[in-house]
Length: 340
Image (cartoon, rainbow, N blue to C red):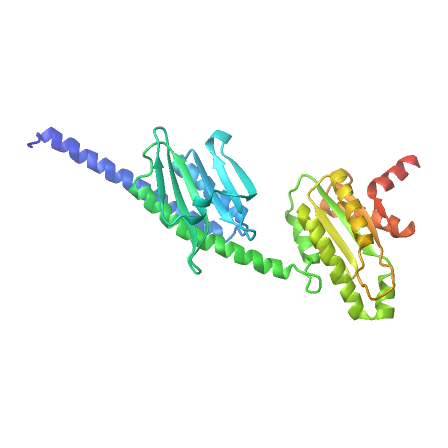
């Protein structure tokens, strides 16, 4: 077929435009890779990394939605997503079950519909050949050409390394933040928490063993350690079911942190005290093991986490001065002040 001179020029111009578009596209890909590498060394948490990556993918490609799903220790998944229909708000769905077919993705899966296209890509831990999650992206029909799919495949390899490193960092930090004797968090963890926490409501519960010194002095430090281990084990099993964190704050003093309001936290504390009093921590001895408990909530009783600990400590002092083996709240101190 013969082409006129004008047709040849038009065809040549079209190819030039297509090449420029492809180069611009590849330039965008390289920019995304560069930014991810740059920020992944600074952002350590899985949540921060997922937010950064999804935000860039939505911004660069104009995707309708984008999602990263990552397997957790309990074989469930944390799902991180940004959706244009939700005004690009970053959303987290924790501890989710996912469709079995997404757990065994072996390669890219592309679905083209009349009005949209979706691509699914597995995220692998290549060291042990285990799928640790997947990435999905949704856009208009036929958006995902070979060049874009190649980019997303390369991206998932990079994401694998990033999220594995993030988890290794988390494990190292957890080890450095754990008390060796009881496996509770330690005081350093509490200091870090006060610096970074952004919860809307948080409750501190203080637990201080009554007459712990008598156990150490009469039965020895080995029995004292056994008592602390058993009490910590009970607290961990009880409060971790409610997403609480247990910290060994001092020798025989523990802090429980709950991201719950005051009313719900107080109800949980009462349940825990009932369980505590029914428990025989050292069956071979006749010493009664009791504890004094205190509770305070941010923002109900304090305007910062630093002052929250002070408020809980004052409530603990009230429990000790009032005869021990009881629960006291900072709300009681406030009420006493109001009456006087």
